[in-house]
Each structure stands twice: as structure tokens, then as C-alpha cells.
Image 1 (cartoon, rainbow, N blue to C red):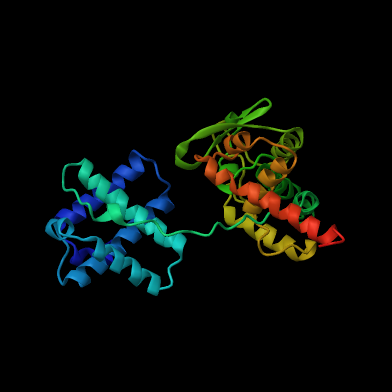
Image 2 (cartoon, rainbow, N blue to C red):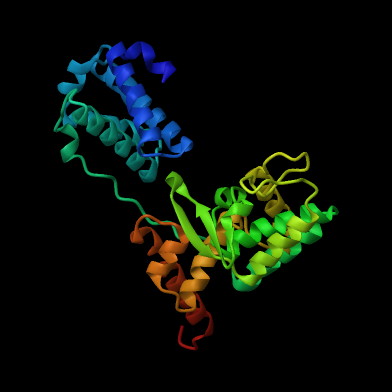
Length: 309
């Protein structure tokens, strides 16, 4: 927010800082989300200062009209902002003004009449079952150091075999492994239990047998070659090396393995709500996108095989 500080009076700056603290401490939003919200508010306040011809203060915000917000959204669209990013920016604005109202600072009706931009749902790019298995198996052939090869295979096994985000996989500790289940800490610090199938457990155990570092029960399992916590970038680069060898598209990423986990479960009759729990989705609507993925694959097969297609 420093680049817009001179356009905002100290009272608003203090409220912004308090709002961000609230989002982090109470709502426990991820650091990247906080950064994006802070940036969105900074851009809005900068626009508002130039739009109204003076520094933004409480009176500016109280007198703000819906037309001012629409002008801001139009300006952002002119900068080629996507509907998804524009929706996030509007969400940040609403969150900030709800905070001001909750704290008894001020209230405004201007945002109540602004609709969130419609977003086209982008379908996840899932790998086939064979591609997913080949990706994990071939990972071990790309590395001469056995413990590093076992490490990378274990991480990707968690993404595909347990549906974990890469950040969740790299945060797993010994204490999280509970027999046939695994405790996973997801977005917002929320925890869930995920079944630990035999192949995934075997991959983890192989890695732990070969790992040269002594790991405490509460320390992340996966380590870099110097003993520090493994960076997700290294796993992403490993898959980038694999893609040409396996003929996979650029969309074949660690997250694509998580998408594949959900798509393959659904395709074999998995219950949508159970998949929601396994993925750690707060809303069922987020998980429902996988029904479209499965239907899309079905239509592809139909068009390729049906004599009248």
C-alpha cells in the first residue's frame, strides 16, 4: 500500500492495516490472498483519489456512489483484467467495507447494488490414469540420487493418490501419518483426514528409509538436498523435465495430478460430497466442476468411437 499512501489519509491507512490484521488472524486467509487483497484495495483507493480529485478520507468513502465503483471496474477492465480477477477485487472491496461497518466506523450502500462479474468456469486439465501412473513412475528415473528420486515420487504420489495440493504435501509430518489415514492441513489452517492407500504409504516409507536427514515428528518430511524444507518449485521443475519425455502438455503440473485424483474417483462412481471432503473444498460448488470434466471426457470418447458422430 506504500505506493498509494500519499493518496490516503492516516485514518484510512490505520483502518486498512487493522482490516488486513483481522483477515490474517481471525479469518486466517493465506498470505498470498492477503497480498492480493491489499493490492486490490491499493488500486481502488488510488483510482478513487484521482477520480474524486483529492486524497481519500472517511468523507470520500461515505459519499462514494455505485457509479464510482462502476467507473473503477470499467477502468480495470480497460486494463485487461479478467473477470476472475475483477471478482476478487470486488470481493476485497466488500470485505473492507464490511469491516468498517462492523467496527462502527462507517456504512455504505454503494456496494450493495454492484453485481459480481460472471466468470466462465475453466475445466481442470486431468491426466489419464495411465499418464498419472507413468508420471510418478518415470519421476524416479530422472534422478541419480536414490533418496531424491524416492522423495519426488512420494510427493507426486500424495498429489495423485491422496488428492493433496502441492503445499499440503510438502507440509506433511510424521505426526500426520495415522495408520490408514493422514491428517492434512489445508487452506485457512483447516484440517481433514485423507485415506492413505498402500501405494502412497509405501512411497513415503521408501523415501523415509533413504532420507539422509533426522526428522522430528512435527517437522515436514520432504527436504531439499541441503536439509531445508523442500520448495514446491523443485517439484514443478521436475514435472517440466518429464513432460517432453512422456508427451504431456504444459498443463501437466502437480496440481493436475490433484485434478486427476478427483476426476478419476468421480468417473468410477465416487460420491461428490465425499470427494469434496477429500479435496478440502469449503463449497460443494467448487467440487461440482469435476462433473463437467467427467462429462467432457465421456463426450470425447463418444465422438471418437460412435459411427454417427
